[in-house]
Image (cartoon, rainbow, N blue to C red; front, side, top):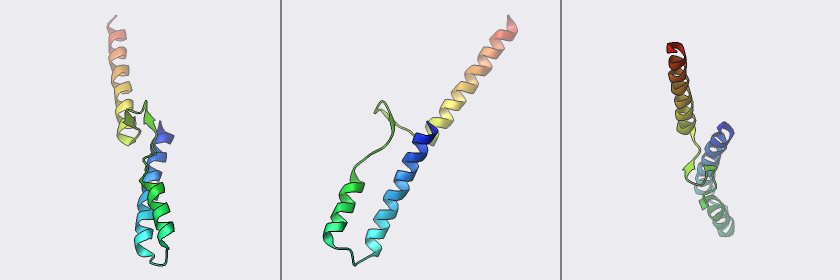
Length: 80
């Protein structure tokens, strides 16, 4: 999960860099600009069953849920 989230973050950074680059460089011909737009307008991201995009919040939430359930199971085990 961590590698998927980091990859998604890097894709966003690359997309923003190319968008900024295309506005700064005026020497680029129209064909190159259109190719960059086509390639970076497509949404290619790692997801969980194409329902949720992997990101940092998902990782933190998952770890929090595991910790909470671990504490609950530990508490149940001590009472027995």
